Structure formats: structure tokens, C-alpha cells
Image (tube, rainbow, N blue to C red; front, side):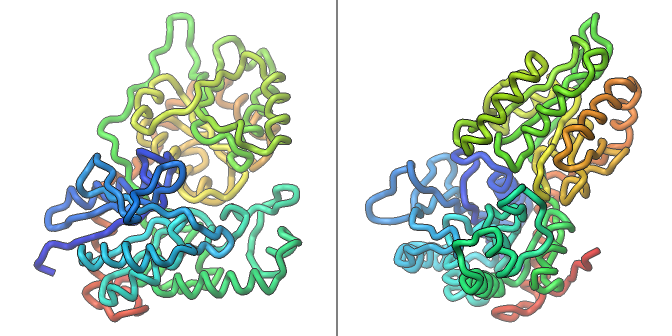
Length: 437
């Protein structure tokens, strides 16, 4: 294509209003595309309550950038991933995309927007390339897209109407079957699906999406320089500052982490070690989880320090204060942005040994694995790294360098062009194929 390639990147939230990995990843792609010659990207982010809506239209300006647009949507059905307010979609979203005339529409999420947005864009722009990125299992799993059982927090390895009914006894298997058929039919409208991890892509292939349309492209970071290693005070010799970055939810395993810290023998932990928690929203979690956290925090005592929430722009500064990053999630994860950030800044990781975490953090090269959900095994890893003064520097020598946002944008652009060069409306596979491992 000789003309300027126009891309519309769609997200379920704007990173300036809703701080999450998918929001950051989608906006980094938007910035990366605009850094490439011959490409122009516009970013459309869903916004809802408590942000007030403009009276006459769902479309709103963010006033931070002419290429960043907001779409107000509040009438969302979480079970069917559906937007009940189809009038706004047909009137405002369709008018917007027809005026913009993008060659590519790339959905990084439909949460809050609804799968009807996919349908409306395909109908309005039959010759455009339609791409969907998956950040978790929301299309497959009603339990927040985590693929974790509702009883006992056991990992779920497959989804079916019967299995899902076992997690949600008040929802009939027939309703789960209806959900699956609706979601899959809407996703089939896309030309290609992108997953930042091979693990997640394989799960979607097992669920029934065509492997011919599944592509693995890592999210890119928009960070200039890595943070230097923490300066050790004269009395301090060990790399003994551990950090957790993220929401304080049951799925993130922060309770496993604090439990593990309390189990490390005092002679190993010493006075110089510290777990630094950068996260918030514990007050919004289930009461039983809050009670468990209070007990664990009391047991851990001064070993744990809480620093509250943070903005993504603060990460380089925060990384200067820590030596290790811990990712203790009890769900599979996909490609947590904190892993890519830790790798970029040269902070070895301790992470659960499953899913996207185990794929992104190579055991013994980028960090160390521990058995998911096991505070005992994580405590053993703390003992390992605190007892071996050479391990931190050794891991730093073998850690991989994560991809930047412009390089990621170039890989996405190659996919877009492959689709458009051989494009047939509604469903022909892209010219270039990613073979799943």
C-alpha cells in the first residue's frame, strides 16, 4: 500500500484514567505505530461511570491528544460480553469509523464496549482488517477470565458448559452454551487474533479458534533507559529488597507472598531484607480475603512495607529502590507488563511456575520459579537468593531484553499488511501464519 496506513486501536480504558496492563499495552502500540513512517494511529478508549457523559453523543475528547478519543459506555452485560446500548454503537461508533476510514481496526479489548462493537465495525468497514488481541481468557471464562475454579481456587484447564455450570450452579449449562456460541460467532468476524504469549494463544486454539489466525506478538514497552542498580549502603551487602507491583486481589497471590515472607527464618531474613508492596484496592476485595490479609500482615510484621498505588510513569524511579520483583499470581496470567518492566530494568524475578509467567521468565536465566500457590516453596526461593550473594548478578547476565513499543508496532504492522495484501471480507486467513508451538 502506497498511501498512509490508518489504524484505529480500540481499548476498554485509557491508561490516564484506568491503569492496567491492557490499557498500557494498547496505548504503547498506538504510540509505536505513530512513530513509524507512513502510519497513523488513532486511539479509541471506552470510558464509563463515574466519568460523566456528554449529552448528545457517546464520543468524547480526552483533551490530551487529538488522536485520543473516548467512547462512553455504561450498559454492559458481563456474562455475554455484550453492550445493551446498541443505539450509541450504530449512531456514534459507526459514524466515527466511517469518517475515519481506517484500514485496520485493532481491538485490544471489548470489555465495557461489547462484542457488538466488533459486529458494527465489520458491517461498516467490510474491507478493513479487523484484529483482536487477547489479554486473558475473558471470552472463554465467566470467572473474570481467570480460568480458576470458583471453589478452592483450583486452576481450570478447559472450559465447557458443564464445567462452567459447576463453577456457577445458578447458571444453566444451556446458558453457558449460548454464551460460547455468541462470543465465538462475534470473534469469528475478525481476520486475526494476537496474543502476547504462546500459552494464551494455544488455549484459544484448544477452545476452537483457528490456529491459522492466531499470532503471537509481545506487547512493547515505551521506556527510554533502564534504571541503574540500587546503591547499597555501606552496611548493606546483600541484594535483599523484594517488590510486588500490582492490584491487591486474590488472583494476584499477594497473600501467598506475604505468607512466604513470614516463613523465612530470621537468621536468613536478617535486618536488611524487606518486601515492598506497591499496590492498592485491598478495601474493595472480598471480606474474607481482607481478613486473611490482615492476619498475614500482622504475622509478617516489619518485614513488609506498603507504599500504596503508583503510576506507570513512576516505574523507573521505583525500580531503583528494589533488587528483585515477585509475581506470585495464582492464575495463569498472559504477559504481565510488570515482568517486561522488570526484565528491562534488570531486576531478576521470582514467579509462579505456570502459564504466561513461566513462559516469560525462564527459570535460572531471568529469575526463579516456585510452585504456584505455595508459600512454603516461595519461602525456599527467598532463602536461596538471600543465601547466595552471586545469584542476583548471575541472573542479570542471562536475562533477556524485552521488546520496545516501536519494534512491537513494526511486528503488528507486518501482520496488518499481510492481512490487507490478501484480504477477503469476513474471515480469510492472513497471508503469513504463526505456527503455534
